[in-house]
Image (cartoon, rainbow, N blue to C red; front, side, top):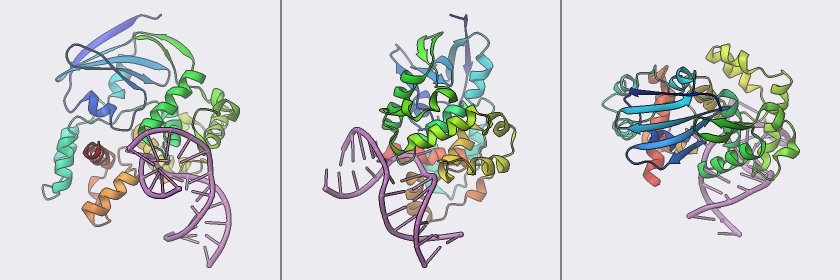
Length: 274
DNA sequence: GCCCAGGCGTCCC
DNA sequence: GGGACGCATGGG
């Protein structure tokens, strides 16, 4: 195994448990710990152990990967400032933001996000997690990491054959994944190009991909490309907008942070019922 | 059996 | 450009 390294930092607006339950990451595994909360976190081919006690967060990861994990945790974004931009008159959002005061938007592995959110369509979060875990165990490379052996997310080449995808509970989504995997493997879809694009360009590019519609595209932009203006509308958000905003949410008020606001709403709403 | 879940492609108007 | 419909799967 490669050498590991560890960093401890103070961080606000960060609650690992809230993030783990926020429906943007599907491979966070809770660890037993005495004091605080800890998760083994898998992202693409990488692994880290995250451990939190109050505002103190420790990242234990492969040597040289600390910066990557700090970026993953979106260390550069001021969430308090975003929360302050909510008008006091919006009582619903003020309450939701308060309940979600530990949420961060992860900068996750683009390929894993694309496949994961294709799987997410017309699906529920426990099942999405189960399906993705099974997929990684069957098709992902086995890797020795700082926190033990794990499976990395399957490469495009290993998801390109639809026969390999049978029996994983993907349902009708298997053909979308196989198609995208083939195109990435063959260079017809370029993840590097996507990363270099403006939000508008990425929007157009993603639109042309079979199996990726408006909602999944927004999630890819938000969680995989860091475009925080994206505002995914799923069944939960639809419900909130109908109930709290008479069918029209003032998304234009949140130019470059609508995705953060959306995630406050999503987390708060789901916490209500769970 | 029904309804629902971080929807999408297709068909039809 | 918008609205119905079918789609795989599993949990409540």
